[in-house]
Image (cartoon, rainbow, N blue to C red):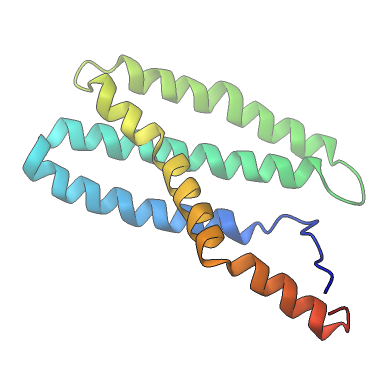
Length: 143
């Protein structure tokens, strides 16, 4: 039996990651208000939303730059001009707000990465991608 490797990236993974991160941030915010205080919970929520917006712009930039029919230079430049100066200025503002402590901000900034790692680990543990590859190859007569 031959296995076909994945050659394309499924951008649906990013959409599912953003959705899961949003739900997790809301849960952490509501529960965190009670246990950790309003400003720490708001810091986690704000940094998490910043991280989600950063991932949205990064995914759009990658989609624009890696098109099979060529790079749309104007769109890529526009996305880069929005993402880098404006988004990172907003991130700097979050870091300089005196009400926000660094640890809750760090938790919020890394929330998307944690969700991605856990989702990828779950897919690998449950062998979901191997089932897709085996199903596609058997439907094409490769198995």
